[in-house]
Image (spheres, rainbow, N blue to C red):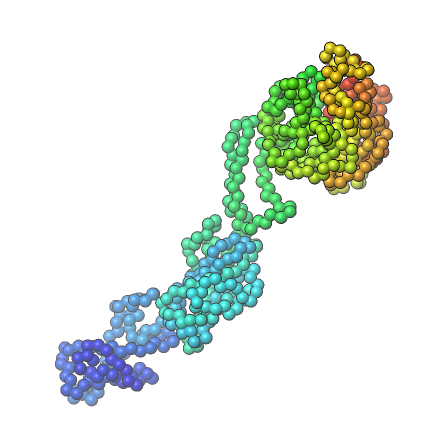
Length: 640
């Protein structure tokens, strides 16, 4: 077949501009033109163009000779070009030797990923270039296999970028194989980028050792070749291995920094936390991020009693005292940063709040002598330094109310407040240490009241022995006992004022230091219970065996019983009785301590279970109409 010749010899009219090509033998015959003479030392140069075959091969031995001349030249092996380096990727000296043909394959075959994060949509990026041209009419297919472990289980996948050169054929999850159709001619030595999206698994895994690529078409194909992993990549948190496709991190915080602003003892310390997760954390009910190991002071390791504030009929206090044994009390501070008060609540918090403590609400007196009800909240870790919490949303001001907790849930209820609702029976909760409060019940089924006893009782449902209750069989139950629901008249007098020494008969109005609207005192001896932290209530007892009273004390004994003691019903009727219920407040037994001995009758004391015993501290009483007495004693009978 004819073949065009180029070069100096053809242009100079030395040889015919067309030669004769025999493909089977690889023979080219070039005719000298008539009258052309090639003198010694004259170079005859020309070139011609062939199409390389589809398979790789080594350079061939090429020979030259003449025929039909007056003196023919014998066949001799031509000297191949062993010096020139071709201007193609991967070329080396010797590749310019004639008919050296590379195996069809990839001169660029890199693969990497966008993210190693578990559960994330992951963009796998492949960059390829071939050493041959692939026409778009050859039905060629590009196959990448070894992308193992993804959670993409459909038969296809999103193709994010393909330069209009590829179309998705199919995806095989079990073998990690993606196959694509060639949709346009791929030029040799031209790079193409394709991006496919897979879903990373939730669990961590190592990347596959190899990812292979191949191109199969009509007339020419490559074998499977190992792809090169792209490096470096732009992954923010991880190692270079995380750039390798299907290398997946285990779910974790990739940044978990913690620091503080103060190392001084007994000082306020702000803890700074920075967290970055490699997993999509969805905020649903019950989702929490827990940080453990930060304990400024562990009050649980050194159990102690703390008492604060109060009123001695002459002045309000804001002192804080502590005791390690229940008998000796020493001052932590004589003047805390919170205003003096009485009728407040002091609550010890658990490990959820690093064993801190709260002062909440109460009442104090203004400069004009009027009562001021409070709703402020103060927190401390040591009882000495106090910091006010300013809630985003809070409850109405009140005193002589109920405050308790269960785990991280704070519950406040009832008390005495301003008109138009001087006797409260609402229920409020906070789950962030008092920063935000939510009213869960505007009005409970029990009458509004103050001076009642409220206890969150771990109600036993199965008794293992007389002194041991199964913790797994205890249900938290909120109780409200007794209290006063009076609506008219004066509820507190100052008998230190002239003309106010006794309370017999009608006392002058100026003797009154707490003037509610109370004509008579409808005190209660009922029992109410809630098993859902105050949302709904059930009346356990309408009229208990113990007398109606206000300011009783209530506690849970070591064997899981309920104990109610003290309180008063009128100005001259204070109690020193003691009652115990072993059936969750339904029935009560009147106890006698050592025959006839008991503590002095009183109200407004504090009854606590401390270490292995019960302790009653402080309170006040009126032994007769003229004598008002405050107590600073502590009692711990063996039966308690």
